[in-house]
Length: 261
Image 1 (cartoon, rainbow, N blue to C red):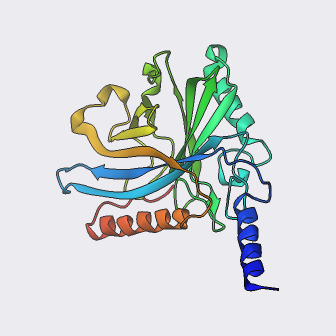
Image 2 (image 1 turned 90 degrees about the vertical axis):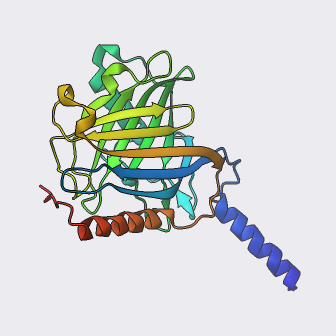
């Protein structure tokens, strides 16, 4: 057995691992960019801003990546684990929309998938299409360390913009221990073509009181399309470490800590 043969065998095994032993053409892509958290100055706290690089996978939910190196696992996402995520999203939208439901024939996922035996998504987006037109975005939000999940359904109008009734949402879940669990409003702004997203957090429980003076913080996600690759850094682990690292800064700056209920 020559060294050349061993080398070819190792390369072949690695190639099979990367393709998940299926030998299928890779029909996935990725988006990479930055997430920016910006806490605005208040009466008792200075402005605080941090950012970190991210890379998200993008693919058709009916044909997800499935490899030892990186895979889409149903258990990592919202809803009963025995119910297919595709069906769960459609039923959730039908329940909210009722008679205004316009149909969905394709869902594409943008977010983190499991790699190195772990998956965490501060936010991931499911783009719901009908006849190649974007109709809804199902936005899943997750927290840590509590490992809870919730979702916000964003309706898209005929011009590809957010429907006016989908811009403002009452906060459903405690996301950060340095923000209250209730009494806040989320304002969603997005560029669906470039997969950019901006979330403004207002420190008021009423939509009628949403003003610039009540703007507490802004979360911005700016992305550019890139090539999908199974070979990757442990991005989920890195994201969590960065979140805890910035939480330490907030703690040292004596930001108010809100107990999880």
